[in-house]
Image (cartoon, rainbow, N blue to C red; front, side):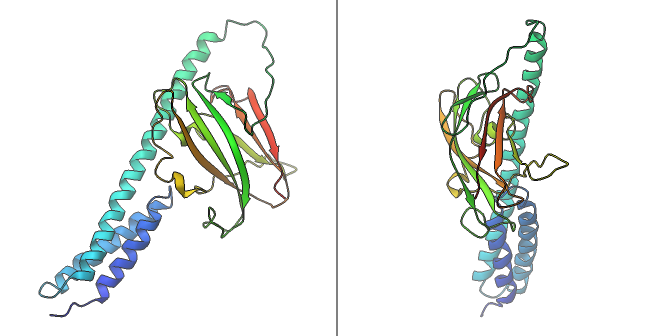
Length: 253
C-alpha cells in the first residue's frame, strides 16, 4: 500500500536540519532536541505505516538517529579537550610554585608581534603561529550564524612536548589568548568566540596533535563595532596570564 508521507517528511526535516547543526558547539544542544523529535515522529510513522511502504519514514528516522549520535560524539570530544586543558593547568600550577623562589628580581621579556611569528606557549610545550586574518561580514561564508561581523584568525600549532594537545585548546584554553576591542571607556571589551570560520577544520579542530607534528586551525570573534581596531595578546602560559609574550593590533576597516 501507498506510504502515508506526512510524518516521514517532517521527520526528514527535523533530522536533516539537526544534522546540519550537530557539529557546532553549544548550538548542537538544539540539534539534539531536533533529533529526538525527528526520531519520535519516525517511530510514530513506522506504526502508522506498519503495513505500507516506509521509504520516507526510514530516511527521516535514520537522519534523526545520526543527528543524536553525532551530537553525543561531538560533546564527548569537547569534554575530553576541556579535561586535557584542566590537566595542563594543574601541571603548570605545580611548576610555577616550584620556580617562584628561584629569582629575586623578575626579568622583563620582550613582546613580539603575532602575524607570522612563532610564539612559544605553555612553557615551551608548543608553538603557535598566526598566519593570516580577515573580517567576515554577516552572511558570508565563515559567518552564517549570529548577526554581526567577525574577525577570523588562521594559525598553525606545532607540538613540541605536550601529550594532550589539540588545535582548539592550543588557542582558547592553554594559550591564554585575549582578544579585545577597546571601544568602551569604562570596561575592558573582551570579544566573544564565534562559530568556526573555516569548514575545512570542522573535523580536525579537536583532534590530538602528535609530538613533533603541526596542525592548522582557525578561530573567530564577534565584533562589537566595525571600526575600532582589535588587539590580540598571548600569555606565556595559562598560569602566567599577566606575562604577555606576544601582542598585536589589527585594523578592521
